[in-house]
Length: 331
Ligand SMILES: Cc1ncc(C[n+]2csc(CCOP(=O)(O)OP(=O)(O)O)c2C)c(N)n1
Image (cartoon, rainbow, N blue to C red; front, side):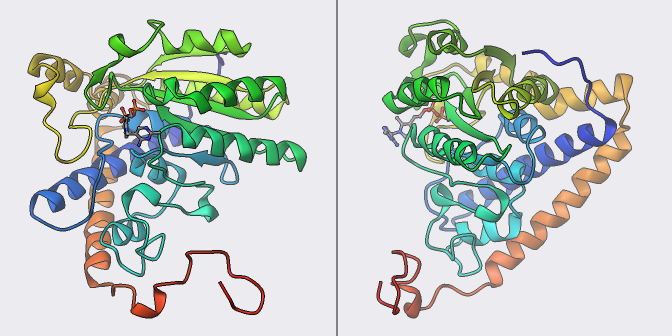
């Protein structure tokens, strides 16, 4: 599944820009949560940015992604604007879901987002359906499903891998192995040391990549996309990564893992490593990366302002967007 092409400077800048925006979005959100802003339950993506950026760097605007409960990073990487995302978290009418969805339902179909979804494993079924639709309509679109190593053990994931393989559907199974499903370590819950080894059982290529390196993820995703667009069927990518904070905003990680392990993961931080590589051998300069960070900070300042100043949905919104609108106006 290896490709020989190298990312252009433009592609590298794009990946850094997205990783930086995701990190800043999540850090701003964390600060808002900790200062008492009611945004509902959130699962921070901090630490995993290179996976979303690397995969989405290989996708086109009209390709799809399906996301899980830890979905903010996936949405930003696929192009959802941060202002309506932030407004959604604030429950405002200007949000991606008109304030009715919150963190775990963010959707923007215009950007190819099939939805953030709190049901573990559901993203896999959604991506499979979209891929089947692409095949039936004879387009070259592909669909990527993001799920954790916990989601890799859910029944629907296996049913979908089997079906995608039989029907040669253009799906990319992206397993973000961050080491823990809530408090359960992967070593306790997986039959194989590498989750990607399971791909062989479904007759598809499976690779295990460094999820802290966006270029490694992009290379694997490029190869998977190429195979999918050529009608050769699905691929499986396991990206080894780490979530720096708790499972959700209220979770204390030190109940089930050690400080030293957390520090070791932070030492391999995707943004830090990317900056060090660029400083050493380019092609981007640190000043370029700093300018990207500054531009993203401004985007986040504006997004929070937009979210704060937007109105809440009115009572007339109570029954809209809940069911499909039937002909004649009844719902
Ligand atoms: C079908 C289902 N079972 C259980 C849960 C409760 N739950 C929410 S997140 C989670 C852990 C998921 O772990 P993983 O898939 O590895 O993703 P991560 O949180 O590590 O990103 C569980 C068990 C759920 N939401 N849906």
